[in-house]
Length: 105
Ligand SMILES: [Zn+2]
Image 1 (cartoon, helix red, strand yellow):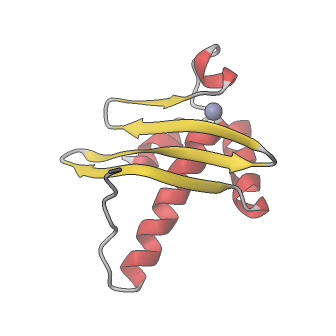
Image 2: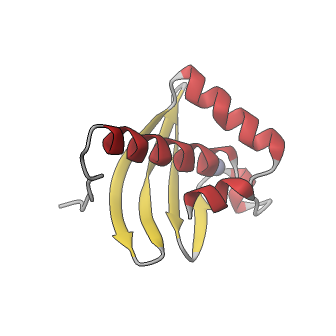
């Protein structure tokens, strides 16, 4: 599901998310629940004093940035969260652990 999201991100935005990964952008997860058709994940993408709220669900993706809100595209922040989540799952798998769900209290 996250790979499908990434496949729909336009090339330039995909590249900017990769640069973000390289530059140490942070994804602060606030909520992650595994659902039948994928994952329902949300949190904050933080870098250079900026902070954007991102949600990815099987039914759609949301971000608080202008690209997503005004232009209604899959922005670099959504792409970054998808990459960060996939990287996290891969790391957990290679350590023989299950990715953890996160439910804010
Ligand atoms: Zn965004």
